[in-house]
Image 1 (spheres, rainbow, N blue to C red):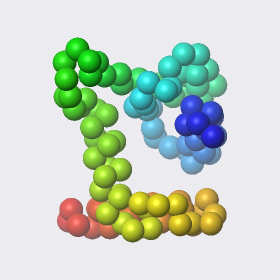
Image 2: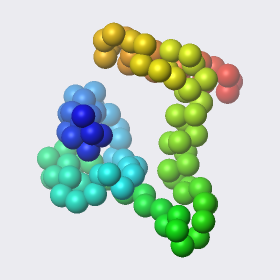
Image 3: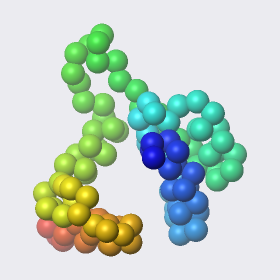
Image 4: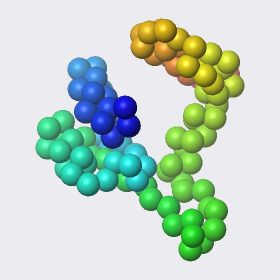
Length: 107
């Protein structure tokens, strides 16, 4: 399933968790009426970050770089670099454990 299709499921989960998220950063796959539908239905604002690689060459996009850096940090965990988990719940718990490890290293 493409990310844009799963966006509605993610928004429902965020809403159920009573998350304090207000703005969501996304790449170019989240353009179009999806952004407006999510704003109307769930109240989340989606900011699409698009790059112009052809015009300026490679330059990191500031806000998108934060997300890519976080994914890179998570890939240091062997179980997250491939899809080893059989259930969604166990995969979610492994992501939580990885982020806890990242936070503990910062202390």
